[in-house]
Structure formats: C-alpha cells, structure tokens
Image (cartoon, rainbow, N blue to C red; front, side):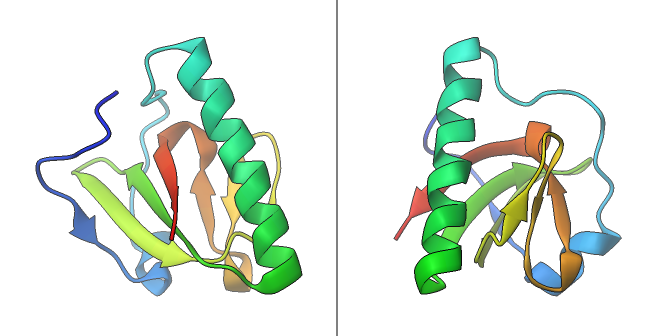
Length: 98
C-alpha cells in the first residue's frame, strides 16, 4: 500500500451514508490489516476520551476518499462515526493522526 495517494477526494462525513462500498478488501497484506486494526482502536480510544479527530482514507466504488472525523465505535465489520454513520473496515486504507 502506498502512503501517498495521487488523488483523494475530501468527503464530508454526512455524505458517507450515500456512498456505495464494494465487498472487497483494499489492503494487500495481513501486516497492513493488523496495523489498520490497531490504528482504528487507537483512534477510537482517542475519540472517546478526548473527542480527537483523525483522517480516515477509504475507498468506495469510485475513488479513494478522506474524511476528518472522530471514531466513536467499531465492530468486526464497521467503524462508527457520529450519528451512527458507518464505514466498512475492509474499505479503509489508513488512519492518519493529526
């Protein structure tokens, strides 16, 4: 996985529910998937304790996007933002801490 993307569309978190997410995994290796999981957990802890925002780089059916938000919760398949907005975990490329 490249840490720099050629084009990333900024997306308001309120627009996320209208996006279409394919089922496939966007990461290539078990190591990347483990790092993503650890980063999600760290971001969720920071969000719940200090309402800390992160950049989430994710991919829908059209392009790679980013959203700046707080991760409030997660389960095996989704991360949850404010107002129960969900992004599939398998569509997240990386979490960037500001």
